[in-house]
Image (cartoon, rainbow, N blue to C red):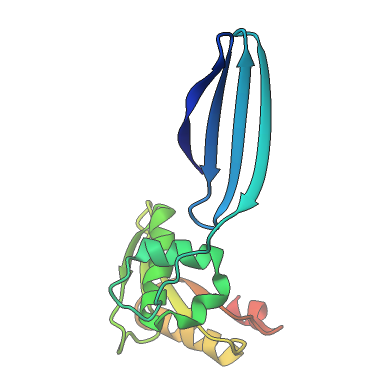
Length: 175
């Protein structure tokens, strides 16, 4: 939330009022609080809730959008994830891991040999990430393909990030 002070006013010699508007810039919900102070001792606070406006509509196919804008937008409107270009989605995933403290490298979009992002942790461990922005469930063969890509790059750890789901045997195959 951020706060906008709408001002302090005098109702009478011994009474003043203060109004605050608290607005969530992501979803548009707002809270208005009004505090009336009588003789510097008695405080009465009234609170009103509501919503106004709508989220900014982003053209998620626009390659020039800042990654943090896309992340914020998707946090509020996850159903829009399929409108993000797959390459930009890989960059969004990398930015999430960067915010968690990893050094990240997004590999080339084509010819990446199945590894879309490489993470390096504080202990210098390298982790390969495969990102699939899809509606279809991930197949066991795609998990095996990630394992092969990790092996070819000399990586011993990997993460499969997807917008869909994994089949029953996925955990067994990953192990």
